[in-house]
Structure formats: structure tokens, C-alpha cells
Length: 339
Image (cartoon, rainbow, N blue to C red; front, top):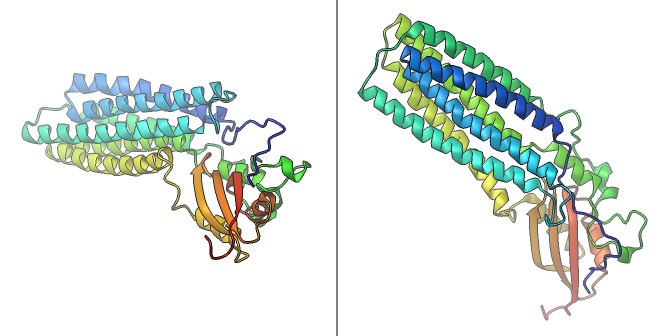
């Protein structure tokens, strides 16, 4: 008894949100970062500052990362109506975040290597002019972080119990046999809006790491200028490399989890089991849950029961789970003791 009737075609646009604001902010930050990158690299060569030069090249890798974020938004919008994407283009954003995380890891390794070289072979630096450029770079990074931090919180809505009547089991006026679990619940859409944009998170992490390395460069250049502590410059570089590597690890883990559909440890899985098996008769024989939006999930459920109900009745049981945006249910009769 599988509920697979689909008399009307409904596109799976579960995670296609208005990202134009985020894309515009990303482009503006990209332009600011590109200008500052050129200035820092040029000043680093001119004044002999390895700290400033390393910060400039570090910023160059982030120009690439921000470009990846911008391209991800463009592709997501371009292909948003393409039916070849089963659940929309949301994972393009995750792929961009994963790529950025890998790039952050490379940056951390390169920064650590460069810092070790400078510990071994110190070079003469014009600390004063290099310090001015580093301060300007920090100001640009902070402005960029503020731009990225202000993305789309105004329309976020945290799902509540009042949203349950719009869940996956709500038929929107169709006969029960016409509703086969493809309803895209407003509650799930609201949860998606409330969740963080991982692509913006990756861009934000890059800008923050730039700001952090700028602060380290300022401290090192200041110590070299006023205290003669030239050794502090490479030490700060090593500290910065460690922090960037830690951020990269977290972002890599989050994005990789989504890409490989490692979601069976999600609280949503336990919620589905409790709801379906609440009558002490039905049992879930097979369950697959995966993410189709930032906070939206799809599920395929196989139910066995001694006195089976219709798939519609089982979907009504999970209607209170706001994160569920797409549910397919298969029901099989299995006399008690035979399963």
C-alpha cells in the first residue's frame, strides 16, 4: 500500500530563497577585498614586510573563496527552475562552502610554512609604512564583516507549534489520495529562512580570518617598530595559521556532513520514529532522512503494522514536525509476531 499518486506536478523548490541581497553583499565585499589585496601585496614588496606580504597573499586566497561564493549564488539562481535538480539547487551553496573550507586549510598550511621560514631567516622591514597599510587592511576587513553579518535576519521565523497545521500531512484542499508527501510546508520554509546560509558563513569566516591575521600583522609590526621584537612577526603568523585551521576544520565538517547525507543522527529521525510508532502497532521497517534545505528534510518511510492505516494517516502523525518538507510513506501489513 504505497502512496505514490501524483495527479498534479509540483516542483521541488524547497530551498530556493531570495538570495539577491546576499549575492550583492558578497560582490561588494569581493571588490573591497580585491582592492586591499593589491595594496597589501604591493606595499609588502615595497617596504620589505613579509607579514604584510603574507597577509596580502592570504587575502588573495579569500578573493578566490569569495568568488566561489558569488558563483554559487549565480548558479543557484540560474538553475533554480531546472527540473534535473531533484530538490532544487541548495547544495551548490554547500559545495561552495566545502571548497572554501579546503582553501582555508591550504591558507593555514602556507601561512605556517612562511612563518617558520621567517623565524629561520629574518628580513629587514620598514615597519612604519607597513603598519599604516596593515591598519587600513584591518578597517576594510571589519567593514566587510559587518556587510556579511547583516544578511537576511529580518525575515527569519522560528517555527512554533502553531505551524503544525501546515505540515507535510496538510492536503491544501486536495483529496487524501492526491497528497503523497510532496507538500512544501510553510513551517519548513520558515525554518530554512531562519537557518544560517552556509555559503555566507564561509565568506564570513574568510573575512574574519583576514581581520584576525591583519590584527596579528599590526601587533607584530608595532612590536618590531617600537620594541625591536622582530621575532614576534613569525610567531604571530603561526598563531594565525592555527586559528584559521580550526575554523576550516569546523566549516569542512559542517559542509561535508550535508554533502554525504549524514543525517540519520539528526533529532528529526527520532521525532519521526516516535510519531509513527505512537500507537504500539505500527513499526518503522525502513527509514531514510536527508536534508533538502538549510533546515528542511525529506523522508522515505516504510511502515509495517498488524492493523495498518492509510499512508495519509501516518503522514498526519508527522505533520507536527516543522522541519519535514517532503514525506513518502509505504505501508505493509505484517501480522504481529511475523515481523
